[in-house]
Image 1: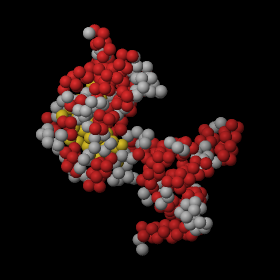
Image 2: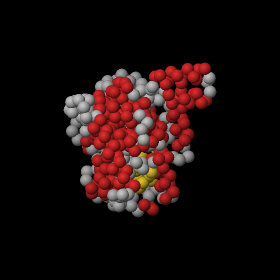
Image 3: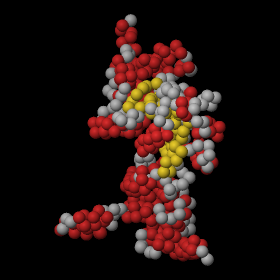
Image 4: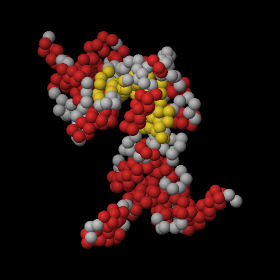
Length: 456
């Protein structure tokens, strides 16, 4: 008998014994062998300090049973984890009293560990089971789906975020280029996970990964070998792109990579909802910039062509964000014209609306703020926080149904200049300063609709 088969048999034996111990009560009720109460008993057993093989078997059993729970049962389990698996109060009070009597480093460390919720150790031990990491990421996704109506789960969610921030830190991540030779199981997931510009079919995917002027990179974690965490799509071009249509066109003539002078990051997609709040994108973009600069020294310009997902909603929202009356007039006149069928495909309409729309867009990105004093647009917060410069506002740049619904057709170029990234990041992080090109700020000086009528 091999060592691996012996361990598998041992795990199965211990799991069977665990199931037998828990077969009591209504088999379909919460305390039955498949209910949340039984899983709570197993979680207590997991923390009991039994042998490693027994602990692995219990962890595997918990994850298998969890997968069979319905949403109501999962909620009940999470609520029990929140209320019954916090810090050990008695242990914490003893550690606190010891530290107060002798505030040494050793007693401070003991106090720190005593304050840790017991559920964090539950999650650590679950992670040791085969497939544990993937199961825990899915578990946190379930919690995120419940948080809106169940704020009592926030403490458990914080524990997940705390652990994932360590388990998925940059030191564990592996950057891989995705191309047409990548295994189909991963390519298929790119089609499903693409969140910015839908990949319609395999031919569309091939046009984004196979030609010499296209690149795709993804971060992976060793525990999730075939699950990309985040990926970025890049177009290699001669010039900065100001519209998404030419980049996605299937009938374009590819450019030789050696002829490119610009790298355009046109889509960044997070793949694992359960890792929400764990930052990957800033590391991904900076490493891809470094790799492209090394492999293709002819490329000197690194920009994004990014959506403005909150702009259309802001245009249509009540003017309670401090905008001036003149901007309100711009909004009303713009919305009337934008709602006309085919307006963005009519050159005369575009020419008439463009100055006022870009004026509003400049206000939206440079002046309007949320309650925390940050730019309203989430994509802007991401790139500005990475040290990019707000370089250009492009309209109309995305006339797809989604592009119009979310951004009124607006797209934005953010420029990553390696020599200025750190300075821009520090200015934004410490003082809220937005690095912006003159080409953006000058739109604020464009006459509004009301001013044009006054002049007339």
